[in-house]
Image (cartoon, rainbow, N blue to C red):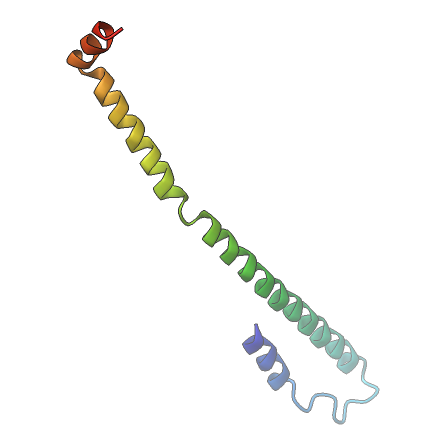
Amino acid sequence: MDTALGDLSHGHEGFGKGTKGLASAAALKGIIDGWESRLKAVRDECKELGGTLQKAGISFSGNDARVKQSFEAMRSKIDHYSQPDSRTTERAGR
């Protein structure tokens, strides 16, 4: 965004010299100011979102691994109890 703001400023350097009183110059100045304001707002929002997204990424970074481990732990229990020998052993032990 800073590059876009710089380009906008650079592209309109010297604007206004010799255009005093022209309605089109005043209208263009309003447009330039509007774009500058919008670009600054977008830049600021991106900076704010960048920090928020980084915090969320750090917070959720281990979720996939934890979920995978939890499913693998359940799978080993299911595999154990689905074996014919383990059901017989479990019933006999009661």
